[in-house]
Length: 270
Image (cartoon, rainbow, N blue to C red):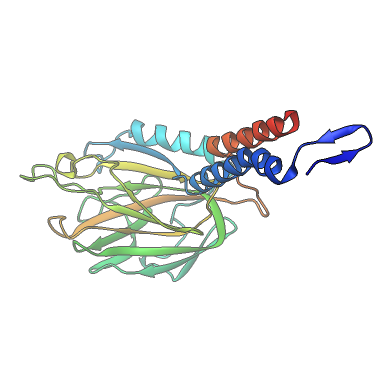
C-alpha cells in the first residue's frame, strides 16, 4: 500500500519503520548495558605503605602521599583522631565532624581507645590516642555505620598484616565497604604478600566513590591468616555525599550517549 500526501509518495510503513528503528533499538540496548556497567564501577582506591617499624617514631612518606592524593580527590573532609575520647571501651557512637558514626565491637579479644605504643606495636599517627583492636584469624575487628551517605572514606592503620618471615604467603586484611548497592570487599594490602610486611608498619587506605554512596565499613581477617593480629586505626576521615547529588558521568556512560546520538542522526538522515 502506498500513502499519498499532497504530491509526495511514502514507502510502505509496515516494512520501512521497523527497519529504521532497528539501529535505534540496538543502540538503546547497548546504552543500557554500558550504563549498567558504569553503575557498578569500583571505587577509586588510594593506598600507601611504609614497610618499616615506625612505632618508635619516624616519617611515613608513602602513607602521607596517599593521604594527600585522597584528600585532593575527596573534597571537604572531616577527621576523627580519637584524642578527645575517653580511654578504654570505644563508645557506641562518636562524631566525625557533622557525621555520626555508630560503632559495633566485633573483636574476639578487644577494641579500645588506646594511648601511646601498644603491646603489639600499634600507635597513633599524631597526638596520643587511637583506636586499637585485637582479633583472631577469620574474624571481624569492628563495624562502623554512618548516619549520612559518604562519597569518601579514609584512615591510617598502624601495624596491620605484619607476618614477615612466615614460610608461606599470607593474605592482607579486608576492608568491607558497605554501600547503597551492596558490599565491596577490598584487600587492604592491595595484593602485597603479608609475609613481607614488618611489625610496626604504617598504611593509609582511602576510597572515593561518586556513584555508589558509602554507608559504613568493617575490617576483617581471613581464616588463613596465621594467628590473632592487632591493628591501630587513626585519622578516620569522611567526606559527605552532597544532598541530591547526581553521579558523575563515567566514560562508558558518555560512550552510551554518543551511540544514541549517532543512531538518532542516522534515523533523521534516513
